[in-house]
Length: 327
Length: 309
Image (cartoon, rainbow over all chains, first blue to last red):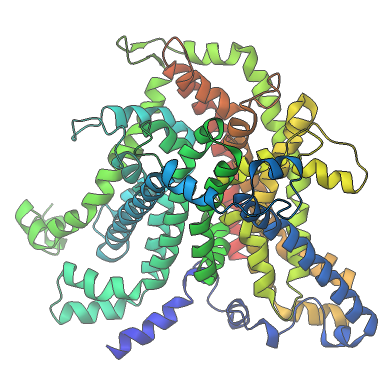
């Protein structure tokens, strides 16, 4: 057991450097974020010069101010507008509560407009998409990387090939598939399955997990096999516990993607009772009062922001990784 | 013949030996992948190719019409507009969105304390659901003098702008929001690349007497060459498929000035009073896919070089 936890901590560092050459200790140490100890563009001598010191301080202060205005500004404004009466928002959008705070907007949006339904739909869609994606990516990656049947290479190629097909090509045929699915019989329109199942067909996830499994130490598998572990036992008790880091990355991608998705749920979830927030909000725009509408926008933003605040490191690591593999 | 047979390691494979050797459990593990990819990825891809050669609207049975759909799509006067608009969007996105994250990332990489705060602030807009972002900015872009952006411009004495209301300003407004929404992700990618620049390179440059600008120009940027190419291609791939912004901000208007290729595909398939023209929609998406696939190939080459460098 101790051996496997040690390996897990080593595997933590693996995904970012999957494709990087292992024979570069300097690189790897730096990517682990111990930046303070090591140098960047500026040398120690540079940093001692007063002009450079003052210059970087000013530039960094300006940068921080710009980032705060651009990154935080619109969100703070939305937060303010969510509890501001309509007329104030329309006449003096940048004033701070000239005629008081209207907390009722939030309650109206949640109960009268029934944003609660869309909110829980969004949670259901995100959860289901996450389950399907993790299931497909881990079992698929397990076969492609660990079990490796004779046809594994062919299969891997077939999965990889779909990375090159832009989503727009699938739009119409996938819509017709949902309308008349094979094997299942009944139309999946207006059911969560219409979003959950296509979300699972993510080659990106499979590639990511397969690459991670490829880097796990084979000796552990062999040891487990000689101890009599079958393929299911090996998957559940050895491979999955060692894969927590990559499962975290896949989970972040899956949940965020489900929360962001618009066009696909718009097409397959026509009934407002099953629609997620993203699909419902544009329709609400025409029909409800502005202050309640802005409160609805604010409510829709809270969960992603909270998730980001809690899992910030995982988000940022996933984002850095995204550039390396995403197609 | 006998030699060949003797060289075989074991008895010939039969379904029974295959199952005993774990073939069956392998197949069980493969079921989710085969089911999901089979029905929701491989089959629709093949169908897209077939449908682009068919006349089909779900009402009457599909008939093969050869390359008629392609001819129809290519002769549609809207296509030229859509291609030009998409290109204009991509170009503006490049001008606004390409240098800003790079400059921000280079500056941020030199922050010694609190770099996490910088990255978190930069990444925040990426976390906002895109639909919320667009709807919020749509309100910001209110063209009246009391609109949010026009109020801010008023502080600096700049007269109110029409933003989404005129053909000339609509597209830049869309791009501005899209850049705001995406720049943070690119910053994080650049930061990851910047921290992996080997410090010895800077040491060596200093021994040669290089100043700060020299180091940035001759060490940092050349080291980022690979990742810069990758983000460039990713951005072009993304902007070629832009849909959300024109769809929600302007619906393609005013006067068709923000009609993009994806909007046109959507219109063929789902906004057709005569029933969806699925053949035309898939034909246009196949054409777009071919162009994008060529770009993806370029991207794959770039990442390969980047990772082996």
